[in-house]
Every structure is written in structure tokens, then in C-alpha cells.
Length: 387
Image (tube, rainbow, N blue to C red; front, side, top):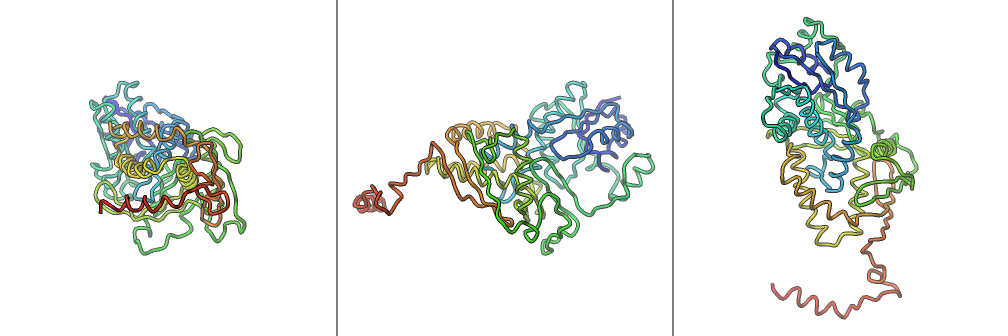
């Protein structure tokens, strides 16, 4: 039998995919990636074996996810279309990379995933895998199998005695990892409809948020967060703690009409408290320590970095070249930002750094002023002269 490594989530689609691939003559190895979705991975592993997988890999990728995917994106300042902090998009190249590793270990020649033909994730999985090993065959069952509806999949699951709870139906499609949560489908497909409160899980509404603001201090070392309120934490715990603090204050909700890579617009709801806090704090620190030309040029780099991430081009030469540029810009992005979290808002209210370019004696209008305003007349004449 041909061997295939399936990126397995434990849901209806990938559980059906195990049996469907078996029906096509494949020996299925299931790969479960723990990127912080907080599920019962032991139970999911059992489900994969009961469904028919010959072997199951469960990999805890949380630290690698944060250190090598989340933090580089924060340092780059990447945010897709000024709204999406790329939580799901960042996990896909990581999962695909380890899927390739397992294929090599198992001497499998084929990879499979449970993505639909309408989404972005299919591109992220397949392009990443092709860049890492172009010899691997790739199968996307949902693009080619005979099932047209979820109900038909449920019938197939019941007929094949697939051990999955198919009675619980939710109109929403949800993806979650350590860095964020995305929700789509159901009533959200009408862009005029306000998102119902029931869809949210890690953030409270502004109405239920505390009536007093929460202040936190975030410390960065070369663009990477290292401390919260002067307490050193590892990278994964920093994300957990900021999700908890931000979520309790209603910070991190996004309602976006988004341009998918495949050419359609979709309505996406995101919850990303930690991402929102980290992005704003890092941006504020850069404003304190970077020179004007670097800061302005880096904004264009950030947009391109976000597009490459969103488009599944994480392992491309340009992405690695941008990493080299970003790394150099972060050499002095060290310091502390104080933030005020209150009813959905996250506002920087204090900043300090040993590399600060802010000079009070130049900015002040008080007695400490050393700025020679007489020089401004000549500056203005020279500045405007070419025009």
C-alpha cells in the first residue's frame, strides 16, 4: 500500500479523510500538531487509530510556533490588510514543515490535508511542502471526493463506523491556536449582520469588561517580548498571560472583510488579545528607538511580509531576505512599554529605552529648550527650493 501522511485535526473532515484515503488504497499515517488549540490530544490520537490510521504522531509545536513564527512576525510588524494578525496563517507552514519531516521518516511519498478548495490554508500547506520537498505527491480529499455537503459526510462517517460525535452541529467554522482564534460561516456570511456574542470564547464583551482599567508593562529585548510587569516568562507563557489579561478586558476582537488569496472576499471574525497587545507595544517601542527613514521604510516591508505569510510563501527566498532585514532593524528595539487596557481598547501610555531617540531638550517648549529656532527659516527655504 502507498503511504500518506495526513494532517489530522480529529474533526469530521479529516476523520472521513482517513477512511476515504484507505478506500483509495493508502496506508494512512495521521499527524496531529499541537499549536495551542487546547484540545484533548490523547483522545484525538485514539480517534485516529480507531478510524483506521496505521500510526499517529502527536507533536507539541507550541514553543517553535511562538519563537520561530509568531515573534518574527511581530518584529516585522506584519498585519494583513491592517486587520488580520495572521494567527492561522502562521501555523500552517509550521505544520507543513513537520508533515514533510514525518513523511521522510516514514518513507511516505504522499501528503494529505483537510482543507477546502475555497480557502487559503490549502495553498499554505501545499506550497510550503513543495518548497521543502517537491518530490512529494499531495492530495486534498475535500477538493475531489464525492461528498457535496456536511450531511453526506456524516452519512459516510456513520456507514463506516467512524468514531466521531456527529450530532453536535455548529453553523460556524472555527480555527484556534495559541496566538488567536478565527470564526466564519453561519450568520457571519451576511456582512450586514452583527456578530452574535455566542461566537466569542477568549474575549469578553466591552459591556462585561471591568469598569477599571488594567495597566501592564511589557519589556522587549531586540524586538522580542521577555517580561510582563518585570516578571520574566518564557515565550509560550507570555502569549497565554496576555491572552488572559487582554481577553478579560475585551481587547482583541476584529470583524473584517478580507481578500482571500483564491480571489473571493470573505467575512472573518478574529479574537487575538495577545497579538493585539504585542503588536501595539512593539510598534510603540519602534517609534521611540528607530530613526525616521528606517521606521517609514519598514512599514512597506511589514506589508509585504504580511502578504507573503498570508499567501503561503513563508519558505520563499524573499521571505528569508526580509527576515535578514528585519533582524538588523531590531538590534536596538529594547525597552519597556506601559499599556492601559480598558473596555476593548489597548493604549500605550508610557515608553522607555536606553536606545531612545527622544530628546526632551529638543522637544520641549520649556526652559530646557536648546533647539535653535532661527535655523528653521533657512531649512524651510532649502527644503522647498526644488519645487
